Image 1 (cartoon, rainbow, N blue to C red):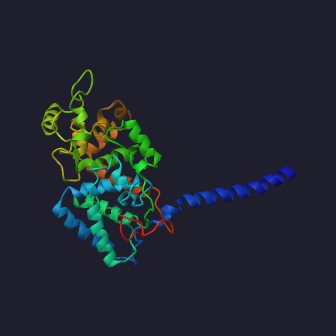
Image 2 (image 1 turned 30 degrees about the vertical axis):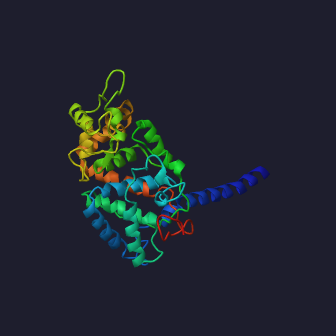
Image 3 (image 1 turned 180 degrees about the horizontal axis):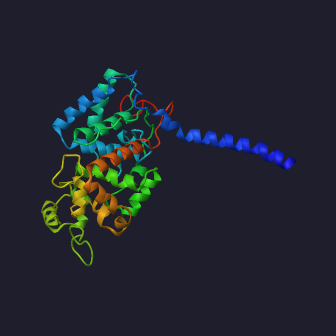
Amino acid sequence: MKGCESVSNVVPSLITALVVLWLSMGVCRSQLSTNFYANSCPAVFRVVRRQLLSALRNDTRMAASLLRLHFHDCFVNGCDGSVLLDGSDSEKLALPNRNSARGFDVIDTIKTAVENACNATVSCADILTIAARDSVYLSGGPYWNVLLGRRDGLVANQTGANDLPSPFDSIDTIIDKFVAVGLNTTDVVSLSGGHTIGRARCVTFSGRLYDFSEDSSVDPTLDPSMATELQTLCPQSGGDGNATAPLDRNSNYAFDNHYFKNLVEQKGLLSSDQGLFSSDEGQAATKALVQAYSNSSILFFRDFVNSMIKMGNISPLTSSAGEIRRNCRVVN
């Protein structure tokens, strides 16, 4: 009887502890909301959109650059604007970002405009989140209500940025990196669809064009006519590796499901793109979804929106954590 009494005392305590743990796990997400700035900065969406439209008029490719910047931000330290920080440990200096990540000046311009409208109110992390959503929408893609309320991180993480999902990674490795931040295989494929806009440098895909393997000089999963064109753009010697090709051949600036149609036709630019359909790992894990998206832009848009919302919820700083930076490049 005494033992039963001790168990009865422990069980409620255990249940209470589990409830507290469960609530603490959900607190960050619950503090993000679509109307976070409804009272403190109701003009934020209009201000961001105006500045972004101006940037896209000057450089249509900027839509893809800002989407990629949001991705690279969220995968390192969570969505905290750390990718925007300058300094010796800057994520901008990591190999995946060096001479590659773009759009920092656009975020600076947007931040200045937002500060003029609502001083010390909207975080750089939220500005980047809104800009990424609008970049997709203004390129012909879906619209969704973004969750807001993130605060800005105080430190960058160059080491973490050096371990971002890479065009040279296997499909299994990419899936593992997504799982590590709370995403899944569907998110891998749908977010890869962001490559329906943008360009990539020769250095990221030239390994598919020359001396690919003992059995084939060119990647056999690459369409031969496309390979020939790319070899002209990216010569084996004499090029600097910085020439660029569209990630979505024949549909470079439209956010649509054409990227997946290209994968089915072996016209994916990056090895990590084509691998979703053609690699052994991809055939086991991702090929069916590539085929489904190639046949239905509605399905792709639906899953892409869900994945963007999930990605935007990776370890956000809320409440009193972090800060609201006045300048996105430096902590206050």
